[in-house]
Length: 391
Image (cartoon, rainbow, N blue to C red; front, side):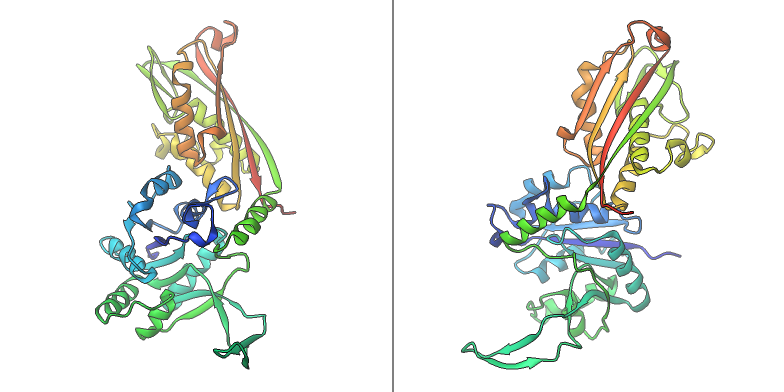
Protein backbone atom coordinates (compact mmCIF):
# COMPACT_ATOMS: atom_id res chain seq x y z
CA UNK A 1 0.00 0.00 0.00
CA UNK A 2 1.41 3.39 -1.02
CA UNK A 3 2.31 5.83 1.72
CA UNK A 4 0.20 8.95 2.14
CA UNK A 5 2.24 12.12 1.70
CA UNK A 6 1.54 15.70 2.77
CA UNK A 7 3.54 18.90 2.38
CA UNK A 8 4.01 21.88 4.68
CA UNK A 9 4.93 25.09 2.85
CA UNK A 10 6.48 27.56 5.28
CA UNK A 11 5.60 31.17 4.40
CA UNK A 12 5.14 32.99 7.71
CA UNK A 13 8.36 35.01 7.62
CA UNK A 14 8.46 38.69 6.80
CA UNK A 15 11.35 38.39 4.30
CA UNK A 16 11.68 42.13 3.61
CA UNK A 17 15.40 42.08 2.81
CA UNK A 18 14.50 41.24 -0.78
CA UNK A 19 12.84 44.65 -1.18
CA UNK A 20 9.70 45.27 -3.22
CA UNK A 21 7.63 46.37 -0.21
CA UNK A 22 6.24 42.86 0.33
CA UNK A 23 7.42 39.73 2.12
CA UNK A 24 9.53 37.94 -0.48
CA UNK A 25 7.13 35.02 -0.84
CA UNK A 26 4.50 37.39 -2.28
CA UNK A 27 6.76 39.28 -4.66
CA UNK A 28 6.08 38.60 -8.33
CA UNK A 29 8.43 36.49 -10.40
CA UNK A 30 7.64 36.45 -14.14
CA UNK A 31 4.16 37.74 -13.25
CA UNK A 32 3.47 35.16 -10.54
CA UNK A 33 3.85 35.32 -6.76
CA UNK A 34 6.84 33.31 -5.58
CA UNK A 35 4.72 31.33 -3.14
CA UNK A 36 2.37 30.24 -5.90
CA UNK A 37 5.16 28.34 -7.64
CA UNK A 38 5.89 26.45 -4.43
CA UNK A 39 2.22 25.78 -3.70
CA UNK A 40 1.52 24.67 -7.28
CA UNK A 41 4.46 22.29 -7.20
CA UNK A 42 2.86 20.25 -4.42
CA UNK A 43 -0.79 20.83 -5.34
CA UNK A 44 -0.25 19.31 -8.78
CA UNK A 45 2.18 16.56 -7.73
CA UNK A 46 0.56 13.17 -8.13
CA UNK A 47 2.04 11.72 -4.93
CA UNK A 48 0.97 14.57 -2.62
CA UNK A 49 -2.45 14.22 -1.01
CA UNK A 50 -2.53 17.41 1.10
CA UNK A 51 -0.76 20.77 1.08
CA UNK A 52 -0.67 22.85 4.27
CA UNK A 53 0.55 26.44 4.00
CA UNK A 54 1.73 28.31 7.09
CA UNK A 55 1.44 32.08 6.77
CA UNK A 56 1.64 35.29 8.77
CA UNK A 57 -1.88 36.46 9.78
CA UNK A 58 -1.22 39.88 8.22
CA UNK A 59 -0.61 38.25 4.82
CA UNK A 60 -4.00 36.55 4.40
CA UNK A 61 -5.17 38.80 1.55
CA UNK A 62 -1.91 38.35 -0.35
CA UNK A 63 -2.05 34.61 0.27
CA UNK A 64 -5.63 34.28 -0.95
CA UNK A 65 -4.72 36.02 -4.18
CA UNK A 66 -1.59 33.95 -4.71
CA UNK A 67 -3.28 30.62 -3.90
CA UNK A 68 -6.52 31.16 -5.85
CA UNK A 69 -7.72 28.04 -7.65
CA UNK A 70 -5.23 25.62 -6.05
CA UNK A 71 -6.29 22.54 -4.12
CA UNK A 72 -4.96 23.38 -0.67
CA UNK A 73 -5.91 23.00 2.96
CA UNK A 74 -6.90 26.24 4.74
CA UNK A 75 -3.73 28.07 5.78
CA UNK A 76 -2.71 28.27 9.43
CA UNK A 77 -0.90 31.06 11.24
CA UNK A 78 2.80 30.65 11.89
CA UNK A 79 4.80 31.47 14.99
CA UNK A 80 7.64 33.78 15.94
CA UNK A 81 10.28 31.43 14.49
CA UNK A 82 10.49 29.15 11.48
CA UNK A 83 10.52 26.19 13.85
CA UNK A 84 7.28 27.33 15.51
CA UNK A 85 5.70 27.81 12.09
CA UNK A 86 6.60 24.30 10.97
CA UNK A 87 5.17 22.93 14.20
CA UNK A 88 1.90 24.79 13.53
CA UNK A 89 1.72 23.19 10.09
CA UNK A 90 2.41 19.74 11.47
CA UNK A 91 -0.25 20.12 14.16
CA UNK A 92 -2.74 21.16 11.49
CA UNK A 93 -1.97 17.96 9.57
CA UNK A 94 -2.22 15.72 12.62
CA UNK A 95 -5.87 14.84 12.04
CA UNK A 96 -5.04 13.56 8.55
CA UNK A 97 -2.00 11.70 9.94
CA UNK A 98 -0.01 11.26 6.72
CA UNK A 99 2.79 8.70 6.64
CA UNK A 100 5.33 11.15 5.20
CA UNK A 101 5.56 14.92 5.42
CA UNK A 102 7.66 17.24 3.27
CA UNK A 103 8.66 20.64 4.66
CA UNK A 104 9.49 23.28 2.05
CA UNK A 105 10.43 26.95 2.11
CA UNK A 106 8.01 29.05 0.06
CA UNK A 107 10.94 31.14 -1.17
CA UNK A 108 12.37 28.22 -3.18
CA UNK A 109 10.21 28.50 -6.31
CA UNK A 110 12.46 26.50 -8.66
CA UNK A 111 12.19 23.10 -6.98
CA UNK A 112 11.29 20.45 -9.55
CA UNK A 113 8.71 17.67 -9.43
CA UNK A 114 11.59 15.21 -9.80
CA UNK A 115 13.22 16.52 -6.61
CA UNK A 116 9.92 16.13 -4.74
CA UNK A 117 9.64 12.55 -5.97
CA UNK A 118 13.22 11.83 -4.89
CA UNK A 119 12.46 13.25 -1.43
CA UNK A 120 9.44 10.98 -1.04
CA UNK A 121 11.35 7.91 -2.23
CA UNK A 122 14.34 8.63 0.03
CA UNK A 123 12.13 9.14 3.08
CA UNK A 124 10.27 5.93 2.31
CA UNK A 125 13.57 4.07 2.55
CA UNK A 126 15.12 5.78 5.58
CA UNK A 127 12.44 7.73 7.46
CA UNK A 128 14.27 11.07 7.23
CA UNK A 129 16.01 12.54 4.19
CA UNK A 130 17.11 15.97 2.98
CA UNK A 131 18.34 17.22 -0.43
CA UNK A 132 21.94 18.34 -0.39
CA UNK A 133 24.72 19.57 -2.67
CA UNK A 134 28.45 19.07 -2.32
CA UNK A 135 30.30 22.22 -1.25
CA UNK A 136 32.55 23.35 -4.11
CA UNK A 137 33.95 26.58 -2.65
CA UNK A 138 36.88 26.64 -0.26
CA UNK A 139 35.56 27.23 3.27
CA UNK A 140 37.51 29.30 5.83
CA UNK A 141 37.06 29.70 9.57
CA UNK A 142 37.28 33.38 10.53
CA UNK A 143 37.85 34.76 14.02
CA UNK A 144 36.08 37.69 15.69
CA UNK A 145 38.59 40.16 14.27
CA UNK A 146 38.09 39.03 10.70
CA UNK A 147 41.32 37.00 10.40
CA UNK A 148 41.36 33.57 8.79
CA UNK A 149 41.63 30.98 11.54
CA UNK A 150 41.90 27.93 9.33
CA UNK A 151 40.65 26.11 6.26
CA UNK A 152 37.82 23.62 6.66
CA UNK A 153 37.92 20.25 4.92
CA UNK A 154 34.98 20.53 2.57
CA UNK A 155 34.85 16.83 1.58
CA UNK A 156 32.26 15.85 4.24
CA UNK A 157 30.31 19.12 4.01
CA UNK A 158 26.95 19.49 2.26
CA UNK A 159 24.71 22.48 1.55
CA UNK A 160 21.19 21.46 2.53
CA UNK A 161 17.97 22.47 0.76
CA UNK A 162 14.24 21.85 1.02
CA UNK A 163 11.91 19.99 0.69
CA UNK A 164 13.05 17.91 3.64
CA UNK A 165 11.15 14.67 4.10
CA UNK A 166 10.34 12.80 7.32
CA UNK A 167 8.10 10.14 8.73
CA UNK A 168 5.26 12.34 9.97
CA UNK A 169 4.78 10.91 13.50
CA UNK A 170 8.51 11.12 14.25
CA UNK A 171 8.87 14.73 13.08
CA UNK A 172 5.75 15.88 14.93
CA UNK A 173 6.95 14.29 18.17
CA UNK A 174 10.41 15.83 17.72
CA UNK A 175 8.86 19.28 17.32
CA UNK A 176 6.64 18.79 20.37
CA UNK A 177 9.59 17.64 22.43
CA UNK A 178 11.67 20.64 21.37
CA UNK A 179 8.81 22.97 22.33
CA UNK A 180 8.51 21.32 25.77
CA UNK A 181 12.25 21.72 26.29
CA UNK A 182 12.22 25.36 25.21
CA UNK A 183 14.40 24.74 22.17
CA UNK A 184 13.44 27.16 19.39
CA UNK A 185 16.88 27.67 17.84
CA UNK A 186 16.96 25.06 15.08
CA UNK A 187 17.47 26.53 11.61
CA UNK A 188 15.97 23.60 9.72
CA UNK A 189 14.03 20.44 10.44
CA UNK A 190 17.01 18.19 9.83
CA UNK A 191 18.88 19.86 12.72
CA UNK A 192 15.88 19.39 15.00
CA UNK A 193 15.53 15.74 13.91
CA UNK A 194 19.24 15.13 14.60
CA UNK A 195 18.82 16.64 18.09
CA UNK A 196 15.86 14.33 18.68
CA UNK A 197 17.98 11.29 17.81
CA UNK A 198 16.68 10.61 14.30
CA UNK A 199 19.08 9.39 11.63
CA UNK A 200 18.91 11.77 8.67
CA UNK A 201 20.20 10.79 5.23
CA UNK A 202 20.91 12.99 2.23
CA UNK A 203 19.97 12.62 -1.41
CA UNK A 204 20.91 14.59 -4.48
CA UNK A 205 19.64 18.16 -4.44
CA UNK A 206 19.44 20.57 -7.38
CA UNK A 207 21.75 23.48 -8.04
CA UNK A 208 18.81 25.46 -9.37
CA UNK A 209 16.74 24.99 -6.21
CA UNK A 210 17.87 28.33 -4.80
CA UNK A 211 16.31 30.26 -1.94
CA UNK A 212 15.40 33.84 -2.81
CA UNK A 213 16.63 36.27 -0.18
CA UNK A 214 17.95 39.51 -1.70
CA UNK A 215 16.85 41.83 -4.48
CA UNK A 216 19.76 40.52 -6.53
CA UNK A 217 18.38 37.00 -6.12
CA UNK A 218 15.08 38.16 -7.58
CA UNK A 219 16.73 39.85 -10.54
CA UNK A 220 18.63 36.66 -11.38
CA UNK A 221 15.54 34.52 -10.83
CA UNK A 222 13.40 36.71 -13.09
CA UNK A 223 15.88 36.35 -15.92
CA UNK A 224 16.20 32.64 -15.29
CA UNK A 225 12.46 31.96 -15.24
CA UNK A 226 11.84 33.74 -18.53
CA UNK A 227 14.94 32.29 -20.19
CA UNK A 228 14.12 28.73 -19.18
CA UNK A 229 10.75 28.59 -20.96
CA UNK A 230 12.02 29.07 -24.48
CA UNK A 231 10.03 26.30 -26.15
CA UNK A 232 6.82 28.12 -27.10
CA UNK A 233 4.08 25.77 -28.32
CA UNK A 234 0.69 26.49 -29.94
CA UNK A 235 -2.12 23.94 -29.78
CA UNK A 236 -5.59 23.94 -31.35
CA UNK A 237 -8.75 22.20 -30.22
CA UNK A 238 -12.19 21.74 -31.77
CA UNK A 239 -15.31 20.16 -30.34
CA UNK A 240 -19.00 19.80 -31.17
CA UNK A 241 -22.01 18.68 -29.15
CA UNK A 242 -25.60 18.32 -30.29
CA UNK A 243 -28.60 19.72 -28.49
CA UNK A 244 -30.94 17.34 -26.70
CA UNK A 245 -33.46 17.41 -23.89
CA UNK A 246 -32.71 19.61 -20.89
CA UNK A 247 -33.08 23.01 -19.32
CA UNK A 248 -29.42 24.13 -19.22
CA UNK A 249 -26.00 23.64 -20.74
CA UNK A 250 -22.50 23.59 -19.26
CA UNK A 251 -20.15 25.91 -21.11
CA UNK A 252 -16.69 26.92 -19.96
CA UNK A 253 -17.40 25.46 -16.54
CA UNK A 254 -20.52 27.60 -16.09
CA UNK A 255 -24.12 26.38 -15.89
CA UNK A 256 -26.21 28.43 -18.34
CA UNK A 257 -30.03 28.16 -18.39
CA UNK A 258 -31.38 27.20 -21.81
CA UNK A 259 -34.45 25.53 -23.28
CA UNK A 260 -32.33 22.56 -24.37
CA UNK A 261 -29.33 20.64 -23.06
CA UNK A 262 -26.23 19.30 -24.79
CA UNK A 263 -25.73 15.57 -25.33
CA UNK A 264 -22.49 13.82 -24.50
CA UNK A 265 -20.91 11.15 -22.36
CA UNK A 266 -19.68 13.67 -19.79
CA UNK A 267 -21.38 17.01 -19.07
CA UNK A 268 -20.86 17.91 -22.76
CA UNK A 269 -19.00 21.14 -21.99
CA UNK A 270 -17.94 21.89 -25.53
CA UNK A 271 -15.79 24.85 -24.48
CA UNK A 272 -13.70 23.01 -21.91
CA UNK A 273 -13.34 20.00 -24.21
CA UNK A 274 -11.88 22.21 -26.95
CA UNK A 275 -9.49 23.80 -24.47
CA UNK A 276 -8.32 20.41 -23.22
CA UNK A 277 -7.51 19.32 -26.76
CA UNK A 278 -5.70 22.61 -27.42
CA UNK A 279 -3.45 22.13 -24.38
CA UNK A 280 -2.81 18.47 -25.13
CA UNK A 281 -2.08 19.45 -28.72
CA UNK A 282 0.58 21.91 -27.59
CA UNK A 283 2.16 19.07 -25.61
CA UNK A 284 1.78 16.55 -28.46
CA UNK A 285 0.07 14.38 -25.85
CA UNK A 286 -2.92 12.90 -27.67
CA UNK A 287 -6.44 14.21 -27.20
CA UNK A 288 -9.26 14.17 -24.68
CA UNK A 289 -10.59 10.87 -26.04
CA UNK A 290 -7.26 9.15 -25.41
CA UNK A 291 -7.14 10.14 -21.75
CA UNK A 292 -10.89 10.08 -21.01
CA UNK A 293 -12.47 7.60 -23.47
CA UNK A 294 -16.27 7.86 -23.82
CA UNK A 295 -16.44 4.08 -23.49
CA UNK A 296 -15.26 4.33 -19.87
CA UNK A 297 -18.25 4.50 -17.49
CA UNK A 298 -16.19 6.56 -15.01
CA UNK A 299 -16.69 9.63 -17.20
CA UNK A 300 -20.44 9.29 -17.72
CA UNK A 301 -21.94 12.63 -16.66
CA UNK A 302 -18.56 13.76 -15.31
CA UNK A 303 -17.81 17.46 -14.80
CA UNK A 304 -15.37 18.60 -17.46
CA UNK A 305 -13.39 20.85 -15.14
CA UNK A 306 -11.45 17.75 -14.06
CA UNK A 307 -10.43 17.17 -17.71
CA UNK A 308 -9.04 20.71 -17.95
CA UNK A 309 -7.27 20.33 -14.59
CA UNK A 310 -5.68 17.16 -15.93
CA UNK A 311 -4.38 18.95 -19.02
CA UNK A 312 -3.00 21.80 -16.90
CA UNK A 313 -1.28 19.27 -14.66
CA UNK A 314 0.37 17.71 -17.72
CA UNK A 315 1.91 21.09 -18.51
CA UNK A 316 3.11 21.54 -14.92
CA UNK A 317 4.71 18.09 -14.89
CA UNK A 318 6.73 19.11 -17.95
CA UNK A 319 7.99 22.16 -16.02
CA UNK A 320 5.97 24.50 -18.25
CA UNK A 321 3.42 27.27 -17.99
CA UNK A 322 0.27 28.06 -19.92
CA UNK A 323 0.72 31.56 -21.31
CA UNK A 324 -2.73 32.10 -22.84
CA UNK A 325 -6.03 30.35 -23.59
CA UNK A 326 -8.34 31.55 -26.37
CA UNK A 327 -11.84 30.09 -26.78
CA UNK A 328 -14.35 30.83 -29.54
CA UNK A 329 -17.92 29.52 -29.17
CA UNK A 330 -20.07 29.13 -32.29
CA UNK A 331 -23.84 28.99 -31.80
CA UNK A 332 -27.09 30.83 -32.45
CA UNK A 333 -28.29 30.38 -28.87
CA UNK A 334 -27.91 30.80 -25.98
CA UNK A 335 -26.32 34.23 -26.00
CA UNK A 336 -22.78 33.98 -24.67
CA UNK A 337 -22.11 37.69 -24.09
CA UNK A 338 -23.88 37.96 -20.71
CA UNK A 339 -21.84 35.01 -19.42
CA UNK A 340 -18.48 35.84 -21.02
CA UNK A 341 -16.69 37.19 -17.93
CA UNK A 342 -18.03 34.43 -15.69
CA UNK A 343 -16.72 31.85 -18.17
CA UNK A 344 -13.33 33.59 -18.32
CA UNK A 345 -13.11 33.67 -14.55
CA UNK A 346 -14.03 30.00 -14.21
CA UNK A 347 -11.52 28.89 -16.85
CA UNK A 348 -8.85 31.00 -15.16
CA UNK A 349 -9.60 29.32 -11.82
CA UNK A 350 -9.47 25.81 -13.27
CA UNK A 351 -6.33 26.45 -15.31
CA UNK A 352 -4.48 28.33 -12.55
CA UNK A 353 -4.20 31.52 -14.63
CA UNK A 354 -4.96 35.19 -14.20
CA UNK A 355 -8.14 36.22 -16.03
CA UNK A 356 -6.04 38.47 -18.29
CA UNK A 357 -4.65 35.29 -19.86
CA UNK A 358 -8.06 33.90 -20.84
CA UNK A 359 -10.02 35.11 -23.88
CA UNK A 360 -13.60 34.07 -24.66
CA UNK A 361 -15.33 35.07 -27.86
CA UNK A 362 -18.64 34.10 -29.44
CA UNK A 363 -20.02 34.19 -32.95
CA UNK A 364 -22.80 32.69 -35.04
CA UNK A 365 -22.56 30.89 -38.37
CA UNK A 366 -25.10 33.28 -39.94
CA UNK A 367 -27.79 30.57 -39.78
CA UNK A 368 -25.68 28.24 -41.93
CA UNK A 369 -24.92 24.62 -41.11
CA UNK A 370 -25.83 22.65 -37.98
CA UNK A 371 -25.06 25.55 -35.63
CA UNK A 372 -27.14 27.86 -37.82
CA UNK A 373 -30.05 25.43 -37.61
CA UNK A 374 -29.63 25.41 -33.80
CA UNK A 375 -28.81 21.72 -33.77
CA UNK A 376 -25.76 22.10 -31.58
CA UNK A 377 -22.78 24.15 -30.47
CA UNK A 378 -19.18 24.15 -31.74
CA UNK A 379 -16.07 25.53 -30.07
CA UNK A 380 -12.57 26.32 -31.29
CA UNK A 381 -9.71 26.81 -28.82
CA UNK A 382 -6.07 27.80 -28.96
CA UNK A 383 -3.55 27.28 -26.17
CA UNK A 384 -0.14 28.94 -25.93
CA UNK A 385 2.21 26.92 -23.74
CA UNK A 386 5.79 27.68 -22.70
CA UNK A 387 8.06 24.72 -21.89
CA UNK A 388 11.72 24.33 -21.01
CA UNK A 389 13.66 23.68 -24.19
CA UNK A 390 14.69 20.09 -24.84
CA UNK A 391 15.67 18.15 -27.91
